[in-house]
Image (cartoon, rainbow, N blue to C red; front, side, top):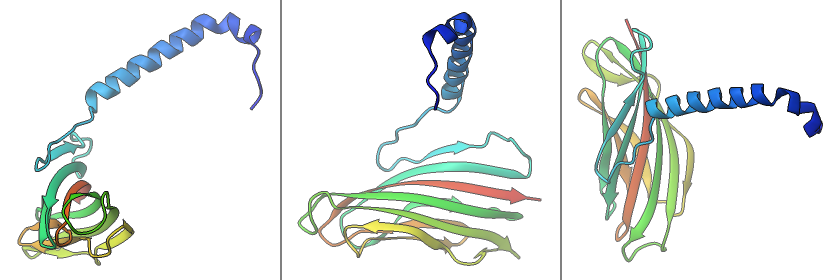
Length: 177
């Protein structure tokens, strides 16, 4: 990248300041429209596409749950509506926060992808859900998409004597008639 001397840009100082001001205002407006949201454990937060297209939509779901054993636990429930095809992309992060099992500060991260639709009133998979990324300190931890009635459950599994805090962000994208 070439070095620009100060004398070369001084004649353009007003224009540069004006552009920076405009950029700052646009960023401020964007941030006002897309605020970061912090949710306490157990709360769900939903951000959506705000109706950009009548047929193609998306939303992001943020959910948290804690586990203390190896019981399969639902962290989020995504309703599947008829006449739509859905793509779910779940990013899930876990951290051991206590318990007598495992090692202090064990953690994990996962990316889980799946496509779903409704055929003759029954929710089904389009292909199969796939974990495209797995990094974990404890091999027994796991995440899955599971169909239950008219919903897709995002489920997590910890380990015995492990207090684990799970956080998920799932982008739900769909197209309809």
